[in-house]
Image 1 (cartoon, one colour):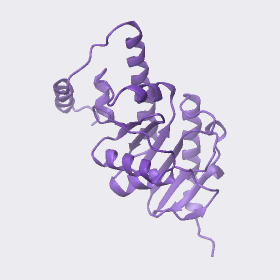
Image 2: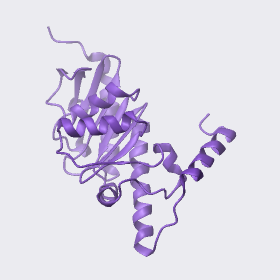
Image 3: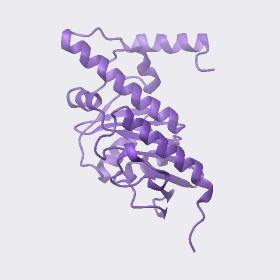
Image 4: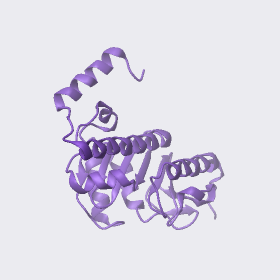
Length: 216
């Protein structure tokens, strides 16, 4: 019996639109990257080899929470990475990108330098996950552990970045913000030694945000 996934049409359309948005931002070139969302007992994820700039609802594959395909083409090779995050956290969206600047920073920094207080929106001092083969259980486990420790966004050495959130729109925004922060860092490094914030500075920003009720 073919499962009824008609109730997921809007979610598939939205995910495809977000893929096109990421392509327009230059964060997913030549079939690189993948996006997913968890809705109820289903996980929606981009199909394998998808070019984001041409993403269509039919390019979104519907899975069970354990990864069995219910509808659509073969899912992304990084499906295990996405499922691992959902198993460990309350996130309902995952965006994996290959932005030029985030890849560059991940090559040289074990943690994202504290160049701007907006890093708080991404979890603070973003770690770089060591290199593992794409699509491997080792990569999925390493990313899942890092996100499970409270880092909603991580860099992947020699690979890209992963952003998680409670909506696809927010996860896409986080991916774009990370790329901007990496752009800022690389631009500053090109003309001198960047002034960096401290962990105490970030804590003060967090306290100030609570006092001013930002985000409420």
